[in-house]
Structures are given as structure tokens and as C-alpha cells.
Length: 80
Image (cartoon, rainbow, N blue to C red; front, side, top):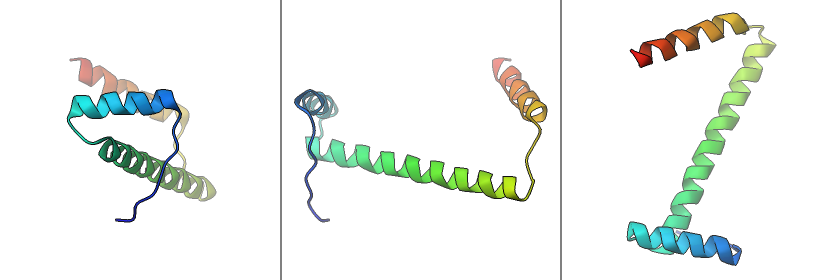
């Protein structure tokens, strides 16, 4: 693994330090973990947007009312 540096403002660095201490982990581990999770989330988001654009280009979109009905049914089922 290649070492690199990250510049953070003092307040954020203190917060990271407190979190790392609470988790009994080194501060560097916490920062690396946070960056990894951020990158994974952003990669997922970009893929999903690209899939949405492809679907729109192929005119394979669902009607808003249909999507809303599915989510309302899902929500109602989870409240039972």
C-alpha cells in the first residue's frame, strides 16, 4: 500500500481523532476506511446514474405513479 497525505482542518482532524479513539483504531485506519467507503458509494451512484441514462435513452422508464405505488406498498408492508 502506498502512503499518501491528506490535509484536514484542525476541527475535522480532532473529530477523526476522537472517533478513532472511541473505536480503538489508529486515526490513519479510520481515514483510509472512510475514504474507501466514500469511493465505493460514489462509484455505485455513478453506475446507477449511467444505468438510468441508458434506460432513458432506450425509453425503458417506469411511470412515476407506478414507482410511487410500489414504494407505498413496500412501506405499508414494512409497517405491519
